[in-house]
Every structure is written in structure tokens, then in C-alpha cells.
Amino acid sequence: MNTDDHMGLWRDASAREWIVRWLNAYCDYSMTIDIPLWTKTNSKADGSPFRHLSFDQDLELTYESLKYIDDDRSRIGRKTKWLNVLHGLNAHAGTEDAWYDRVKEFDFDGWAFASDTGVQGGVVNLLRRLKCMQEDQQLDDKEWLHFLGLSRIKAAVILTAIQRGLRRTCSPDIQISYDSASASKSGGQNEDAFVPKQFTADEKTWTFSTERFPNSEAIAQSAEIVPFPYQSSPLAGYVSVNDMNYQAGIQYRNKFDTLSYQLLINHNLYVSCQRLAEANDLIFHPTMQAHHLVPPRVLDAVDVVERVFVEERWESLLSANADLLDSMGC
Picture 1 (cartoon, helix red, strand yellow):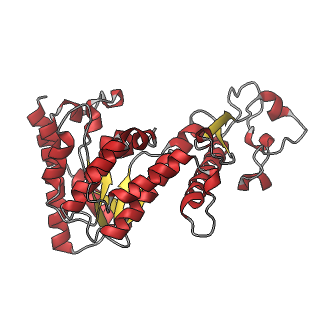
Picture 2 (cartoon, helix red, strand yellow):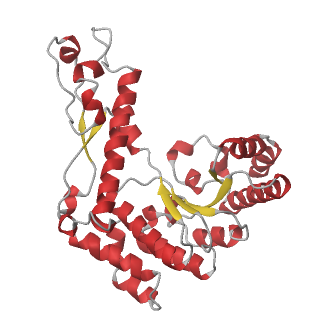
């Protein structure tokens, strides 16, 4: 099948209609329907027909979806609030600018940053994009910015600094959010638990640590209760390691059952959210600040980010601090 046929099948399919209808019925905020560029580089997309499309074809189909959503909103009124998805690949020069220039004509409620347009593509690149959007008035009165696939603590506080800068200069109530599958993948695939740790001025403590959760026949068969190993976790008062090792017997290679995995994922999510919130409080909370527990480089980066949105010579500020800023996304 040639690429034109692929595009024709997508245009003729009912997927776009029922996706938009479902989102309008059930969601407060939704991301627009994009044809993602990661299909070009990720081996997991080997079987996807979109892998064979060119960048221009991806962008054309995405534009058609935006037009469909915009027309639908004009016809039925504003139901869900839409975040316009941005894409770009650093390995393919010009794709980010071309995508942004094509989709910015649609006046939706916010933006979503995918592929290399977010922190993954470098904090400096992200700040340049945001400054461009600021100058184009594409952030004025927007409600929400969402970043896909982000679970690094230093990057999280950088996004809070960005939010503070945008609230001062573009939209006083703008909200930044981000998502991650790390907690679920660690618990659900690897049986790894997030380990609660204390923050210090050492950057090594500003990361997520994991360890393998106990999983063995000896525990499953043991009459001696082994307490849940992380007492700061809400699960500690309800389940033991024995409970997690539910499937005893040589017929079960894995002693976890479905509930065990869900509980471990729940623990990981709790630790993840707790550490992200605590990291932000250490820097930004008006009464809980504890800068002696924050690495000096992180504080310096946060200061630079907040200044970028008000400095007239912001390009020079970015250039002078490029290495520092990009290290915050790693």
C-alpha cells in the first residue's frame, strides 16, 4: 500500500469522529489528535502505517484533525478544552518550527509538548520555543500547558519556574502539568519499588531510586510476617511483604498476582508525587523553603528560567547558561 492509500484510509475511518465525541462527553481537557513523529524513530512503531508517511504527510493529517476539531467546536459549542500538540525532532532540523507554524492558527485552550519540543529536547530549546510563543501572543490567556513523558525531579522544578514566569508575563492562571509511565513500568514490568529518600544539596539525591521488591517462594510460604519495607508509604499500615507474595507453590514462577502489581504501582505513584511536591516546596513554598537542601546548580537554573521571561536580552542569558539549563533535563 502506498502512502496516499494510508492517508486515504485514515481520512475515511470513523476514528477521529468517535475520539472527539468521547472526549467531548467525558473530559475536561483533551489533547488534539496528532500523527506523532516518534513513529519515524521508535522501533515499537515498526508495524504502524504512519511510519511510512513523510513529515509533510504527518503534518497534513494533523492539520486536518485540528480543522475537524475546530469546526466541531464551532458547531456544537465548547465542551472539552483542547491542548494543541506540538512536535519536533532534533535529529530532523526544522521540523519543530514547521509544525508550530502550521498549527498555531488554531485558537485552542492550551498546548501540549511532545517528542523533542519538551524538556527531553533540552531546556534551552524549550525556553526558546516558549519565548517565541510569548512574542507571538500564543500563550496569552491560555489555561494549560502539558508535557508528555517527564519524570525527573530537576526537570519538574524547572517547569514550576516556567509556570511562575508565564504567570507573570502571559496568563496569570496558566497551569503546567506533565505525565510519566515510570512508576507504572517500574512496578508493573520490573517489580521495582520507588525508595523514599531525603533530599540534600547533593544532586544525586534529586533523582528517583528503585530497588527490587522482595519476591520469592520462601516469603510466600513463610509464617513469619515481613513488614512492608517502606514505612512512609500508606500501604505500610495495610499490607505486608507476605501479602504481596500471594501466589505460593512451585506452579507459580512469579509470586505476585494482579493486585500485588497494582499495589506496588500505587506505592510508586505515591512516592513519585510526594518527592516531586517536596522538591518544589523546598524551592518555592513561601513558608517551607529549605534552600540548604537544594543543590546550588538547581537554584541557579531556576533563577535563570524565571529571568528569561522578563529579560530583554534573554537570548544572551540562555547562551551563557546553556550547559547548566540542559543538565536539568537529564
